[in-house]
Amino acid sequence: MNSKIIVGLEIHVQLNTRTKMFCGCGLEFGAPPNSRTCPVCLGMPGSLPVMNIRAVELAVLAATALNCQIARFTKWDRKSYYYPDLPKNYQISQYDLPLGQHGYIEIPAADGAAKKVRIRRVHLEEDAGKNLHESGSFSKVDLNRAGTPLLEIVTEPDLGSGEEVRGLAVELQRIVRYLGVSHGDMQKGHMRFEPNVNLEIGEDGTRYRTPIAEIKNLNSFRALESSINYEAQRQLAEFRETRTTFGKGNKSTRGWDDNRQVTVLQREKEEAEEYRYFPDPDLVPVEVDREWLARIESELCELPLARQNRYVRQYKLSDYDAGVLTAEKSLSDYFDDAVKAGADPKRLCNLVTQTGQKLAKDRDCSFPQLGISPGRMVELVAMAAADEIGSTAADKILEAMADSADSPRAIAERLNLIQQSDEGELEKTIDAVIAENPETVETAVSGEKKAKKAFGYLMGQVMQKTGGSANPKVTSDILKKKLG
Image (tube, rainbow, N blue to C red; front, side, top):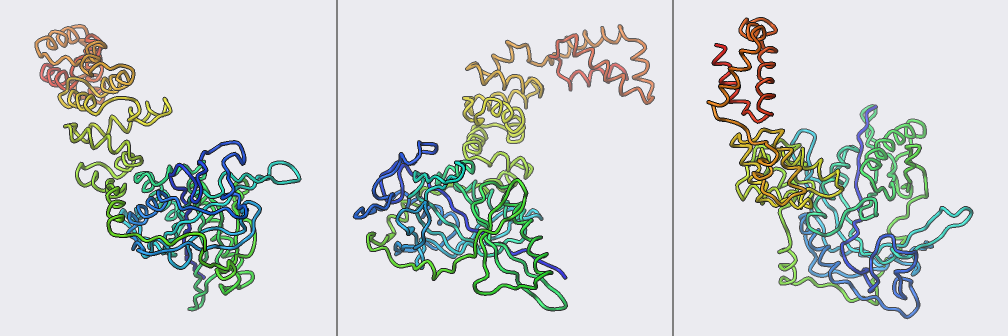
């Protein structure tokens, strides 16, 4: 018996608008319960929805970035179901005419190439409220989230492991952040993932498919990957025991218990016809003309994976370093600005990804928010490239630059970090070190095992006498020459 995991993904992305999808209520995470509501999002009789045009524009922008065909005509549909956090007893969504379809997203594959995952559809809908179950024997309902504009992205079942699904989720988060479509903050529920998982099992020349299980409302990459891997094991064990295969009516919805690291059955999943979709009579259709589409497309930017690949190809950076630099658009924009101003890409990368990122993390901000202009970084990198300062000194200067408006050179001079490269002065210091350490000199020129260590000791003595300002390369060359 052999098995293959098959995963299709449904992703809900909260759009970066000021107000809700069909009313003027503001969106504010952490606001007092039920304080951001009105008759429209509470589903009061007689209240009428009005479409948020910016939500539509952001949805079209995302769909375009995902290489989708944009519908020139679409409409709104009512998806009927009852939950305590859905006051109208229906959700306004899009059914047979989605805003975008037949697209794809490229994600990094295990072999270093790019894998293309097909996008079935991209459509707009409103979110439900939130049920709270932390009050003992009863539940509470907070409707602040009801009516929040959501972009739902549905992939084809092209994913074959928890690791691949995680890779797609990470890449999609980068894309929506680059475009400004969403903040993409998982902890605030801006992105929620619902993988549909089943197995293809081969046994004695026959192929079987297990029933599909949809795992609901995952809001972390770790939970996404772990739940899929667990569900694959669970389905394989169940098939061995029951021999149940996929058929109409045996889909299920499961939740993820993060404490026990298991999926838990919630209910049997509804089929589409059970939602009784029909066009919403209170909303006009959406028609996207060429002029409007062109204006939205003008907001597109270089996407993160393309930029990451460019850094590897153009600047010869490692894929890891390029990934770190392109994780956030503000950081990669900063990097591009500094390189265009003349900074050496590799030296700049090392300073930013190592000392710079650590400094930013300690101050709970991003590197660009430290207030160090790209121009000052260009000067610092140039000093390092000219061997005016060593790598340790460059790190110290960068840290000081976050607290001072002075130029890197002024900081280096103040901290006595400019490297001494005057051969005449260095020669005097090296002569003194040689005279003070005759036994070490003898070991250094002996060619024995300890010779390298002895040479290092002499170098250290020169550095100590110069307060660390001696240029290591120049010092090493002079010392080697004097020792023959």
